[in-house]
Image (cartoon, rainbow, N blue to C red):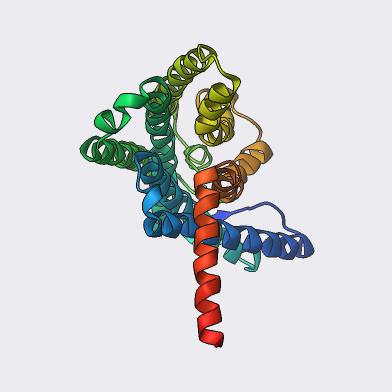
Length: 317
């Protein structure tokens, strides 16, 4: 196609989930509640870890990072989606679309690498508990966290740059809830084989590599747990990893299906539902999973609530 037909697109129109007004209002109310629960739950986890000295350990340091990533990821997508539910024209400027793609893709990559880092932390805690504090010292934890943030951000920057260099011609309708990578690439009026290869390579680096590290860690963890003779010891070791393992299963499954084979990816509706899963459901569930299945977090909640109750009684008297 000649360059004369490759017009500059100044804005995009997101088609969203539905065009029915009543459905959009209902979805708006539902997702507002879920978003508020997500933000409140994750920020409370961060606050709780900061206030309780018993939670100043590598595991909760990484959990703080995970909570911040979840809040940021949800915020990169959900507020714009909520605004579009009530808007007649679901327009997003070109620059805003690029920014949304950068932040959502980057934060998603950070989360996958961070989960692999947390799996290594759990591996050391179960398989080498006597040397845990020596191995997982503050310097190593900081470097691992920085590596997670930098790797996800660099990959996102590269993907965003090469995606928005594609000529969109006059295509500006994105059949999605946000400026998602594959949805934007589909707008291009040129061959996108090189972009699909780049997506697959980055998926291998930032999705499959961390996934195999998680898998290897849990193979060793399960082997170590099975060698524990006492039932109580095996149960305690399992509970050490249960919350993280649950989050891993939630986060990795659909991402692998979505990004490893772009040409045979799910339908557009399935892609929208997957995006909703990662933007709203997973960030909302993560703090609940760590709260409900973790005795230390539950103990910290009870301590904080007790302090708040005592403070309230003092004010009342």
